[in-house]
Amino acid sequence: MESKKLILGLVAGLLFGIHAMAGEDAPAPMIINIADRSSVSLDGQWKYLVDQYGIGYYNYRLMPQPDKDSFFADKSFDDDRTKLIEYSFDRGGEMRVPGDWNTQYEKLYYYEGKVWYRTKFDAAPSPEKRYFLYFGAVNHTAIVGLNGNKIARHEGGFTPFNVEVTGRLKEKDNSLVVLVDNTRDKDGIPTNNCDWWNYGGITRSVKLVEVPGTFIRDYAVLMDKAVVGKVRKNKPAKHRIYGYVNLDGSAAAGQEVSISVPELKLSVKAVADDNGHAVFESVAAPQLWSPDSPKLYDVEISSAQDKTRDKVGFRIIETAGDKILLNGKEIFLRGISVHEESTTPVGRITSASQNRELLDYAKELGCNFVRLAHYPHNEDIVRQAEEMGLLVWSEIPVYWTISWNNPDTYANARQQLEEMVTRDINRANIIIWSVANETPISPERTRFLAGLISRAREMDSTRLVSAAMEKVAVSKNHYTVDDPLLEYTDLISFNQYTGWYGSKSEQCDNTYWEFPVLKPVFISEFGAGALYGNHGPKTERFTEEYMADCYERNIRMMVERMPGFAGTSPWILKDFRSPRRALNGIQDDYNRKGVLSEDGHRKQAWYVLRDWYMDLKARNNE
Ligand code: GCB
Image (cartoon, rainbow, N blue to C red):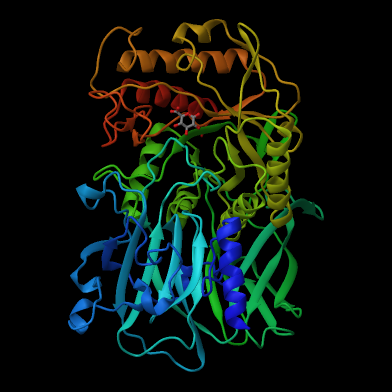
């Protein structure tokens, strides 16, 4: 019966392109605040084998092989040279985890495809505990095998997942094999066409996490914007503090959990329902989190067997007409867009100091906001930004032309959205969830995105939800945004490249804007390209002078002729790798729209932007 099912599954998989095979279950539900859990790091040098044709997975008929014949078996030619075993991880090269493979070996610079990773580790499993393998991110698809068997599959290159391995660990020499595949896919999220480097690999940390039999899996501690009771002069107002705790384990149902914020004298208990879900509410008067005063409170969540600590902030973000209000006060978002790419060496970010470097640049520019484009960035950068008082726009890689009619594509976009929101729901600095970037308007696309927006709101009603849309010409000098998605978003947020794509800088001077609805206008991108150190007339493309001039004119245009202008995140903090940039001697595989070069040199446009932001800051007494 089982084998019949398997055969049917295989046939269905081949016919309908369903990828998951036996043993490739979805990961366990996400465990959050992983840094606070008891864990062992599995980071370091792993063994790797490049597998262009998928020979470690398929047989020569391109049928998936049983685990024992696949590379998940982790055999080696050297185990028994009388046998024909045509691989050996021990003979493979070493690959750093976390890290992208493209920048670790020159021969892998352009490589997209399958790479096998293997590490070995000892463990001391206790029968009372449960164990999970946690992956911060693997780009793009990961199939995880432990001690010879595939156990889970995850799709989505920028969000964490964990796989339960309770009862599967040995004391010595556990073999952890991960098949990583970053092949671009027309039906994927992102799809096969985008403007950033498709860095492959186990790009974020891996841990073995130990939790009690019934443990606190995830939770939210949020604040309602409505004020409770009377506000006393010079005292913070009282608000409803509410949220949930999800317990995971056989003893979850009916168990009591406690949530406390000692500094606020808040201590509340709740009881989990049959699904382990406990909701709570209380009242407190927190000092609100803001860029000027990024106040965070220690929170402790405890259950019969488990306890976890976190830091949370409380803030109110809302819109009123065409204004964005933070804690009831109008705020202008002085932002910058950022890719998760380091300066020296250039590659996927793998350390807290690389995160810090980018955020320090943003602070130096005078920003109070960063757009973490175009996918969920690592958790540490969000947390550091929170401590530094930087507001965040966080987005999923629904970018350009997605397969809007494919239900699997939608399911994956929704899964990535849920993973992003679940991981970061307690981060006060995130004020905008974005579900898409520059997607072409059609009824299918609007249905797809409206579905994601409504899911984001269902999971979290304390933030704004939006998408980076596009402008459209009403007449030669007159632009608007005419997108049915505006009905669903909180902002008129869109990218506009006046002066760069399709026009010259002067175009900014006589471009006029008007919008069909009264909502805050947020320019999620504008910009121009320049090679650092390339000088010439301001009419010559890719000179610093052109870029600086284009910035100046854009800023003037937005400030003077864009009604409801409430903030911007120019494109982009630093030059970043992109396969779409083929102009040798100038681009050399880099998108040159950074106000910094790829290694952190300031271009003239940096100073234009910084002067504007510093001036705004001074005028607001910030
Ligand atoms: C955009 C995209 C961004 C690109 C940028 C560009 O509109 O959102 O991902 O990198 O333009 O440089 O063309």
